Image 1 (cartoon, rainbow, N blue to C red):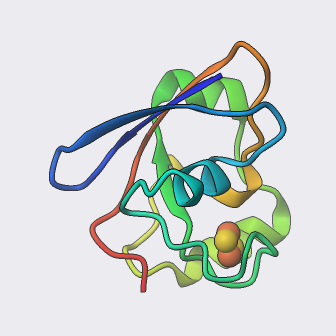
Image 2: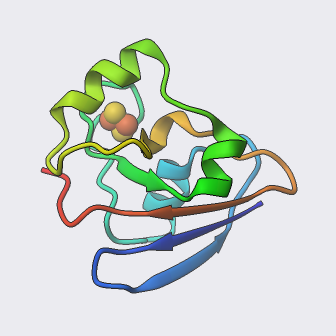
Length: 105
Ligand code: FES
């Protein structure tokens, strides 16, 4: 699975991710800027906020209930296409396109 991250400044980074890893873990492990992931993926920090592209939104769906509540506390205001990237697990053979916000804290 590949994840293409577009930073707020336009920098594009494409990573070959491991199925089962989250979009947050894939970014942190590979030094991709724009995602902090302070809580390590336990859905308690909202520093892994991302905007998902339309085709990725179709693939991964919307946030769960607790994630939806956490999205109210992001550094950059949430949008319709907001997700917490620790909650998006990579599936084999899929491509993911996400944009990271200008700040996470
Ligand atoms: Fe903390 Fe996603 S890493 S909520």
